[in-house]
Length: 119
Image 1 (cartoon, helix red, strand yellow):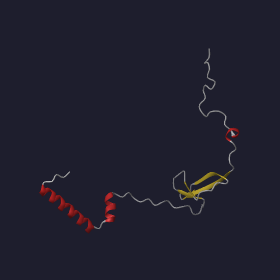
Image 2 (cartoon, rainbow, N blue to C red):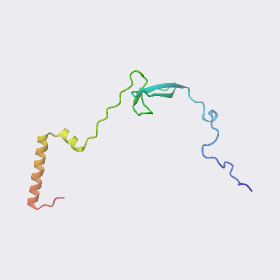
Image 3 (spheres, rainbow, N blue to C red):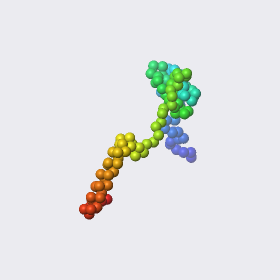
Image 4 (cartoon, rainbow, N blue to C red):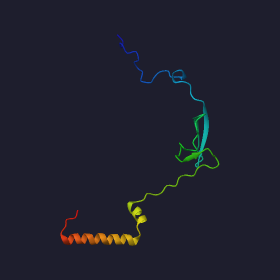
């Protein structure tokens, strides 16, 4: 006796003939070509009534791309990683840093003399 009962055996959710009759008609499309600074071309399909963005990330290199083949957007400038100390040095001059250091040293010395526990 063969497997009894399961009419959709071997199928998965969403499987089956799926066409425009079930989904509805696809919107009319237009092809738009984007160009990046690495001379990559990306052809994308947009709905005819959709607003096409000024720029698009190139799927090949990730750089910004535009529709202007002669003047693609330049690669974004990536700032190097800054340490916490680099940010502090931007806010404080060397003399200010020296003053703050001397105040902290004096505070520590006064606490040591008084026997206060420092963690």
